[in-house]
Amino acid sequence: MRSRIPAVARKETLHVMRDWRTLAMAFALPMAMILLFGYGISFDIRDVKLAVADEDCTSLSRELVQSFSSSGYFKITATPTNAAELNAVLESNRAQVALAIPEGFARELEAGRGQTIQLLVDGAESNTANIASSYVEAIVNQFNTELILELMQRRGVRNQAVPPMAAQVRVWFNPLVDSATTIVPGLIAVIIIMISSMLTSLTIVREREQGSLESLFATPVRRHEVVIGKMLPYLAIVMIDCLVAAGVGVAVFNVPFNGSLTLFVLTSLVFTFAGLSIGMMASVVSSNQLLANQIVILTTMLPSLLISGFMFPLESTPRWIQMLSYVVPARYFVEICRGIMLKAQPWTELAGPTLLLLLVGLFFFSQAMLRFKKKL
Image 1 (cartoon, one colour):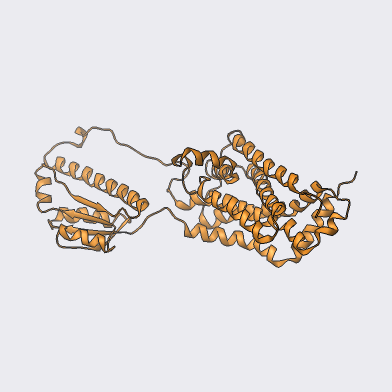
Image 2: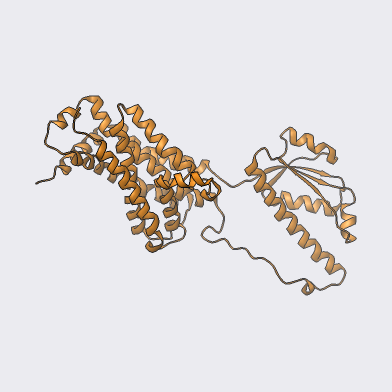
């Protein structure tokens, strides 16, 4: 028996070509999203506002302050005359970190007796506070090391007497620790799952609202031919979106693409199938387009942003959230994208998440098929 899938796919393609709103959502929206999110989301923290109360006013205390201001992470925004004023500076949001250098700072250090400086960090924004604290710790450690070596040199102690252990940290796959390199591969997954599900979420329910579904039911076309035929044009569109989004990530945000393009295309096909299936299921069970869109947003956008590993590591979430994330397709494709683009992982390393992604896609596709009845 001849399949009617190509005929249904051709009909859906003609409909897409005649609807400029669908075309805009299919091609313009993904590009706008990747540019907006790519430039708008950053985990890098620069120019943290720093208040300095230097009660010592010596060349050594100024060197310490200079080590903060020249690091690129801190910007001095307030210089109160004594440490007692730092609390007021933090409360007025004129600074996020406050440094208090006590009187006698240089004298005590040069005498080898050690000295304590006070650092206050505004914890109202916990993420900024944690990152700023790590910057402070690194700067102080570097200052201490240089000071010890200088004091030893003054006293005629050779540098070779210093224990030779030193940590040399090398960051692989993202040597510059650039936020865009981390964000863009995950962003591709979030955008593609949203676009693919939104496109198919309007197919069945739109024809139901316009009354054209009755004429389709009057034909001998079977329900699986309707579902598959309507998904095929969007599969091609979303695959183009996926490749263009990856190209924008490489060309605009300088994200490396170290892995296999063929493997990326094949895994993208599986991911797109899962996204289209979610949208098709929403379209089948909804009575109007608004409801279908709301279902898609709730089932794809929020989970993909929050529990896919895109923005937050899943390991830090409660156990039940981790279990829930197994039905979120973006969870697998975020891992796959980063594995291919950054780590150049072979297919053997990605076969597991790809298989799970396929199972999730088949689950939603089977639900769409079961719930689509050829009757009004």
